[in-house]
Image 1 (spheres, helix red, strand yellow):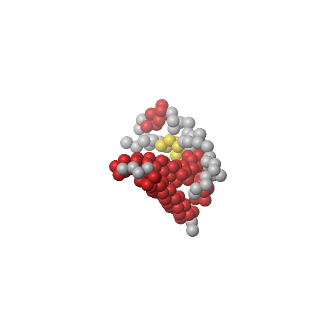
Image 2 (cartoon, one colour; image 1 turned 90 degrees about the vertical axis):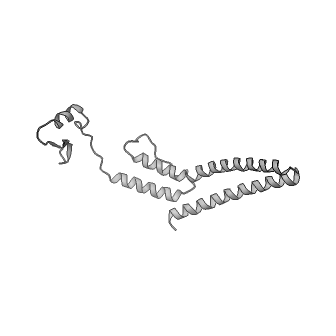
Image 3 (spheres, rainbow, N blue to C red; image 1 turned 90 degrees about the horizontal axis):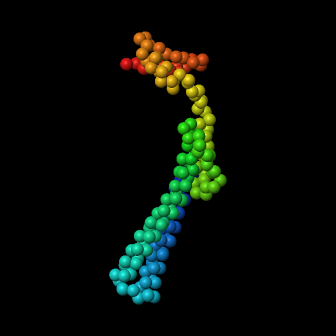
Length: 158
């Protein structure tokens, strides 16, 4: 079984436990209200609706935070190696308990891919608006090539 299937199985089991716990709490509230407190039908239904709504919101918040934790760590791993997000720290993969195998393997793949991409040296004249204006107003096509034979500052073609 691969890591994604394992995560899906864990997610289903976690959600099943939450749903069973929520339904058990509602049944318990109904039994207490009907049998012990002898509440009328309408007040009992209103109480159960309020409890059900509150539990649904709470359980949805808890479940989404728990189930989305692997995606959050993977998001941090991708942003950590992205050139525009140098301030994002590397995720601590030891903290996660849910989906650890999947996040660890995917994070290692991201790090491996990022280490194989050559870093481009910033061009001094590419960001200079005056140099760009001069090159774009040349009457003939012009290309500036760096020492590695790559085109650094091509002229815009009208």
